[in-house]
Length: 242
Image (cartoon, rainbow, N blue to C red; front, side, top):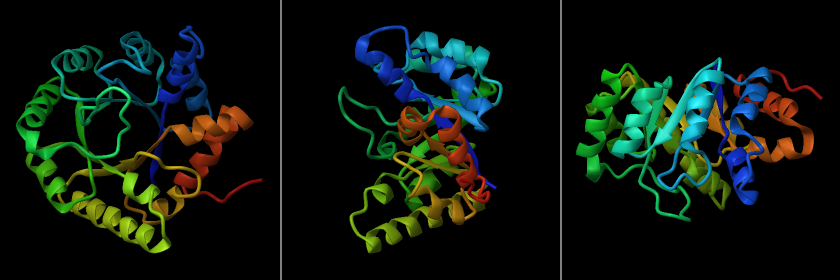
């Protein structure tokens, strides 16, 4: 059975629209956990566009399942992670302002990432790489001795034909199988929703799914409890209820 980590960045994005204190990602995290999620994830961008440093400290105190932090390997962010000690840190690509996340980390900069892995693991933090579903990327992650990889689902979720979607699904499956064979937990995220996550869950190889926008967007219509619960049922592969 796979598990679900809900990304609370979009709650921070709603807050940023009016530059107020509400809605609070930490308060949302409490409700998300009560609704059955297995973990909470947040991405601390270099420009702090959605999640703020203060949010991380509060989330660490309030999250009762497991807190996962996504960061680029920047010294100040690594220092914060070592101080907070989340359950896992997933190392992400460097992202310029107003640019969306489309690709996994650039393995050409592998030395910087590998050094970050050592820093975090020495602090007792599990470490993952956010990578494209490619054989070489998985092998590079294995050489860096990471604990997990988060496979980038961007190409899969944006496929324009059934054939291309099936091809990308196969790539994700193969990458996940290789990661598991090499002793790395295969996770997956980036753009997953209530429809496209089902074929991935049916592969029965992904350890953890990270979903944010789809859940928060549905919560606007039906509430967090129902929105999270519906996704939990899919990821846990439980019978669907009305």
